[in-house]
Length: 222
Length: 145
Image 1 (tube, rainbow over the protein chains, first blue to last red):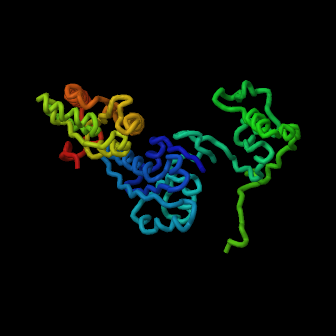
Image 2: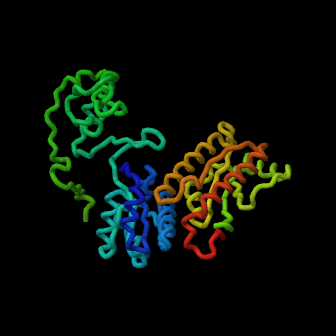
Image 3: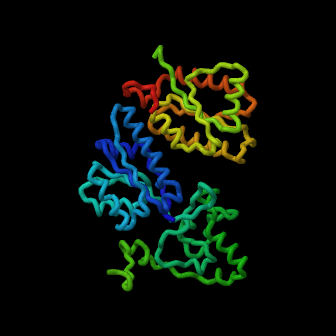
């Protein structure tokens, strides 16, 4: 899922300070799962923002709405009945959702309430760790299902480097060395030979380095 | 400020603090009428949002009274509540409201005296802190809606 974290309250308040009526839009997908921008978080942020205004002797009118998905125009359309009343929109979705609202409702300022972090997985309850960087050319089949792009700090293709100590990365004792994990996994699978293969320098063009990416499915696209 | 009577909302677990409040009554112990009790089936049922909304609607202090560690009727509701209180404190701090206005406390059903004592102590603490800054601008404050 796409993981995110709420922005500091100070920053959010600075954004919405000129306005007294806002539309606070959550998203039922990834940000709900990582507890950053679902219905519950929308309710909490709404209460906190209203109190911050009340402290200053002001009143903030907040219309709370949580869409099924903020990255699809069909769902963004649901805001059409609410948008006129609002002076600004505060979105708790990832960057995709914020941009979709901005694209559809051009006359209203839209502000993000969360910082979009990474594509991650749940390590345990309340902990989400980065697992994929969307490089556009998946090599997990070569590395025993552990990604050296997302999980090696240097993103090296033939590791580990000299900074790997006792299975940990030199950047922090809390960070596993991805290449150590890869080696252990390949050993477990009896595929040590794969480790011997030298992987060539990665072609980064399918990644962001080739500019913004787009997928077109001709059988589906209208 | 001299006449300030704080409104305290106490979310009390049915299996411990609420029964302890009952016990305090049976023991003829007095505690301040400022404390408004909300009975919940377990403190694990209290969400961070409920705590914030209590402040939003005019409470000067909030406390969640749950079972002693390891004694939760539903296994770990009191632990969940303690975490939510910690989160509420953080959120309140971020918007400039004193974190000490919200507390998590634990007791057993037989601790009538502790219930009365805690209610008195928290009421006094909040009285000394003054009104909830959110309600300062509100006309006819102290009447939660």
